[in-house]
Image (tube, rainbow, N blue to C red; front, side, top):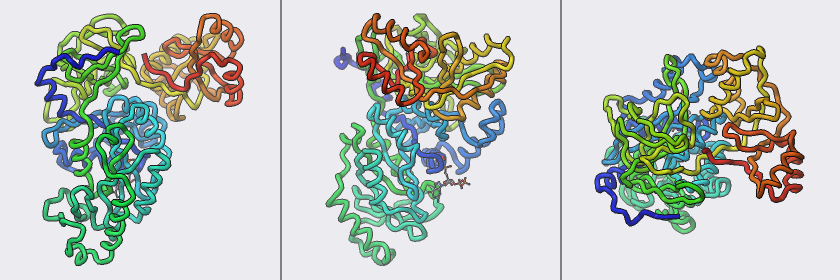
Length: 539
Ligand code: G4P
């Protein structure tokens, strides 16, 4: 791999990049992601009124009748980007769809962030979706800040929660704040690094310094909280003796997570999360990109030339216009409207004009972006997930994953004359990432999804956008594996023997479609030189 570290970078670019923080909030549904998003925007001054994000979400439901499914289930399948300024920094908060059926989308959003805030419901602890999301963060060693939410309720013991996070998520916890009581007796948190207690007052919009009590031994604590302070002092002694203190390098390597306790709905603990993002979360990082053949290099965020990749494609942002928006993470250089860039996969130039920039505060319009920022590019099918755009260089960013689907359906038409439209629709929806599409021997189409709701969405969209009425039938397939072969001969022999279990994905890559776990194991044993992969990178 070649490195360009010796190149001098433009100072304004270095300065602007250093101010960026790009992150996502990950959580199991209902842990409090929407609430925390809203409070972060409130503290960041991007919205003035609590309720705005939720209201906007429901307004979106009301106007997006192109997707009845979304409305019926009352969930959000859309994902957006919110940019706001806080304490001299520019923060990009990437929203992820909360429903587990759309976790593939969420996974891809996580490839575009430099850090994540994990929200845990303190009554429930680690939940299934959190485990999956953490696994994805681990693929890129993304630094994680933990927010343990809903301390205003009767919840589980904090030590118990930390032990569960460490055991199940395999990440070391470094408590930064510690709760003083819980439920009705929740009085605040003790900040271990500042040696001060932040007092909790339910429902207060913003705190002031008057609510800080300095020092764990402060007699004021005994007067105010005689019932709870003893426990707090005991806990803190235990933490200081037994748990590992916060270490920035460990956090940045994705091995340790600073832990904060609070109550999102009461604005409590939110400012500490923002501060941790600014003080500790990394600015946009260098990223590996292929440069043709097997060669790769690190692309530095302050390199002068513009580059980045598409991590998500969203159709029908505006139901009146049938175009799609490609969400693009800038990895280097500076975006300016009208600039010419190279679409590396297609091998041609394209003009970037009127890209969307995302401001949480809609009154401010902006027309530039640097590494860490997201732009939305209008797109009529020429861009796919994983595509790189660059200012000339033959780059290909790595690490945007496809996951092996867990559910399969065969697509069948009610009207056989519509097979062309079905093929086109599925090809396009496959490229967009709404669903995975495999073509079987003989031309039949097989759909693969992570969650069952994806099938409903695709059926609805085929009807609305392609005028195709398709039926999805259950398919006798347990899992899919992408295949790699050591040589041509092995490939031909394998294909001859396994023809009934082979398919191709939208990009033409060979896939093994196993009927059962046993079937997969037997085949893998029989063909030890063939690679069976549960994930593959886009592009
Ligand atoms: P999500 O996006 O992760 O799915 O969660 P969301 O923020 O929508 O929160 C889920 C529920 O948890 C909401 O209640 C929300 O009000 C509540 N919640 C969030 N933070 C806290 C907290 O700190 N303390 C308590 N006690 N509750 C919290 P809901 O009844 O489902 O919705 P709503 O009627 O309040 O909007």
